[in-house]
Length: 292
Length: 283
Ligand code: SF4
Ligand code: SF4
Ligand code: SF4
Ligand code: SF4
Image (tube, rainbow over all chains, first blue to last red; front, side, top):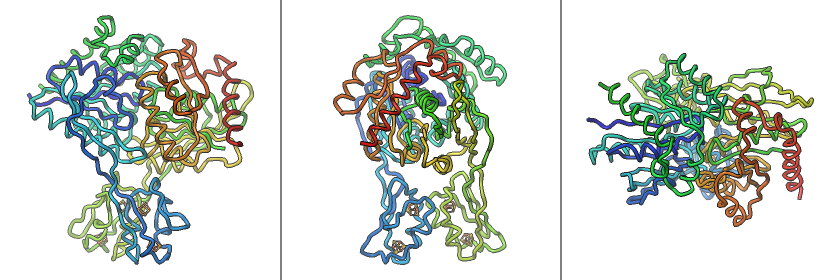
């Protein structure tokens, strides 16, 4: 069978997305993990990867003015649309979008575009199998590109070792990193909490997944913090025809397991483990069946 | 004064702190810069008075004039242009609106047209105790990847004479920097768990790089371990406030209500935090 890719997303972080991804990592057989939450990666805290390879992630460019060649004509400052060039003709690297307009336009060829080292990515081993993860440098752009790179490397790894699944911890939000987390996956599991803002964020991310024609499923985490709102989310799912495939209760063992660096599957035999197993087996069926 | 609220990751209570702080400071103004997932409005329920679309300029090709020379494609570092024989295709979702193609086209075949990337909504929130809060947020259109220009547009509404509370997006990437840049102080919201601490350390790195003074609010302060406190002490970071896990707070949050509405004594706590930040700044 070809490799199936499942992404866990949430609209916003902190809903338990990573805890669920880690549970799938413990439950699924023959898989590769990918942490695409490259801005604030947490999966490694539960899976304890042993890094086997590390690589620089080069992305984007930043303009630098060579003062010795600059005649101070000021053209670059007039043209830059991102207010990156100050009155003293120095470039603020944080504001510079790297568009290179100034560099092409400078009559004295005084502006060089320098490549950024925007982060690092890693190929690792965990007690559950291989894992590809990354760390975006501070204040770097293009997390979308790094996410795509992690996705690509994870898929290559899976194909190389003949794995059945790539299990992806997706990025939060609805911007470019999420688009990169979602594109081309076989299914997306949306995790939300039973709150008004949780429903709001989930519906935005569901719209986005649908925009890319990806089958979506939904689970509510900590559903018992507000049973009424959980009901509203179920109703929303019925109306929008999003399969509602489980709810998980608020459980202190989640934080206890986290403090010990374990997945809940390893740490507890309780209710929560049962729920995770149900959700995983349902997803597994949906994906295999959905594809014929 | 500009105070931004950020966190290494969403879901830690960043919007809770931003909205409650804004409600506790008289005549404040809140700017929700989390344009991918603006949430402050859920809690503040503002009456929206104005909606302003935000555009970026994207190129439009005049086929009559274009001779397919390819200069525009050469200067577009984002690969947003593809040159055909006598025409150019524009992939506007990739365009950053830098203006280079139009400037360099030898045939003057490129003009720029506006493309909507999102909208800014402004209005007022009234508080039950007679306060009045200016409300501004940006909402990115679905399928759009370019949030920094929208964040910049939201920040044009900063009132230099007043107290501005910015709800920044979570994380450490470009939209976060764009949001917190220029702040007088930044409040980092975290949870005392291993995930929370990991994300806090990343956020601290960002603020140190930007040289913005900051402090930490520990939310759900009684769930988890002591490592966040140890870290703050070791790094000399002020813990401005601790908010314990209370069922009332969680329930209020889930219904879209703020802490100060259900537990009014929190108003003083948030006020005290504001004064601490303001007076600390003066020093
Ligand atoms: S355009 Fe070139 S020469 Fe002119 S001010 Fe800028 S860097 Fe200097
Ligand atoms: S590369 Fe673009 S954004 Fe950077 S300074 Fe030059 S014109 Fe401005
Ligand atoms: S630079 Fe102008 S003339 Fe040349 S291909 Fe582009 S649009 Fe056409
Ligand atoms: S405006 Fe800049 S980014 Fe957009 S197409 Fe032209 S050169 Fe490319």
